[in-house]
Image 1 (cartoon, one colour):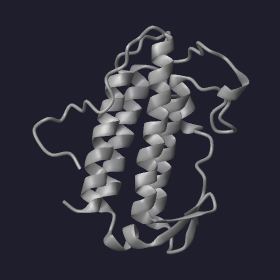
Image 2 (cartoon, rainbow, N blue to C red):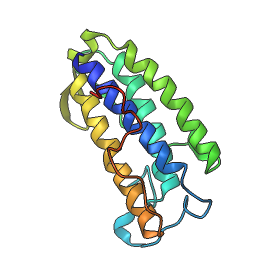
Image 3 (cartoon, helix red, strand yellow):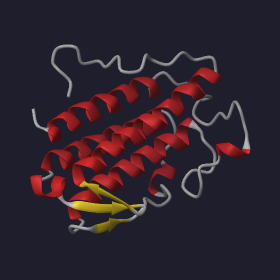
Length: 175
């Protein structure tokens, strides 16, 4: 298994695991802010940290990044994903999970189509230099960071989230 395949294997399992979290939610969970504070502001892209806002952010950012990485020239600067405008009209709950599933399927196609040249080229994001594959690993960290926030929001609402890294896959080596 090469590094691209390892990344894809782990990323896919983490997203599938995220669906396990999201499928546990009731309507009340999606926009609850059980512990409100000024520090829960995530800038222009996410106004208040809610599970719905985090899910929309993940859909938008991952789709944006995986689209951009293939089209950027070597040493090109990747734009920061803007506000998730298209995702704002997707209803919370089943609709949002369905949209994420569809986006993930497209993302997996994009990831599988990346060339060795794309994975080796240097790109710039937020003033930092990455190789293509290094940037992909950073996206996995980004997803895990926000999944931890979703986990905490669920627990603050008396809902025990799934155990992290207890992936559904048990029949093969992951990554």
